[in-house]
Length: 283
Image (cartoon, rainbow, N blue to C red; front, side):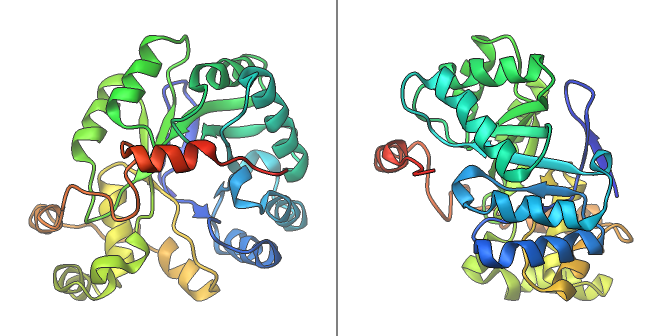
């Protein structure tokens, strides 16, 4: 497994396992399979509703805690945001059954971002979290957060896939020492990703699947990625991307697939901001 080093010296696997949209009743088995396949980075969130199942899989695995890198995410908090963010962290930690987190991300760039970030900074200073970061922050919001706080986010997890490549965003993050992480690396199969002739042709040249080509493309760009699957054989396939490399020409041909637009939702869209900004978790 290759790793990246975050801006505070913490090392993070470049390839992990995500559990978004995996039902809680399937999560424990799925995470157990992922751990058995060799994954050590696990990514969940309070909003996913499956933290408890992730925790059970961790405990039943017998893998020493120090060998795992566990991420969860803070959902938008009502006022007082700083106090409520700390309470939300304690709830997530209890559900996971852990003493600390490796990475805690602010899930959305909405609400009292600064109050929430102050709570996260405090948790980081106390050693409850090894690293803190954000998700879904566009460059302007990210730079504003960096400029007005003490701790620079270690990670920004954003939609990144061959049809929305975020190269300019990555440049800004690199300038400020923020590690880019991909969600939706396979674009959920949209735009015919798994039958795309460019990706299929590259896969054929290397004896690899389209999924493996996409993951290799992300890894070669230095992007942490968290593919999801509920099938053990697909988990193993997704993990097997460190024995080949894409050529410069192949990287360039994938770069030409970029549309520059989200395939899901644009966090700069007022309608999206209104919808997500009003959502609250019941537990």
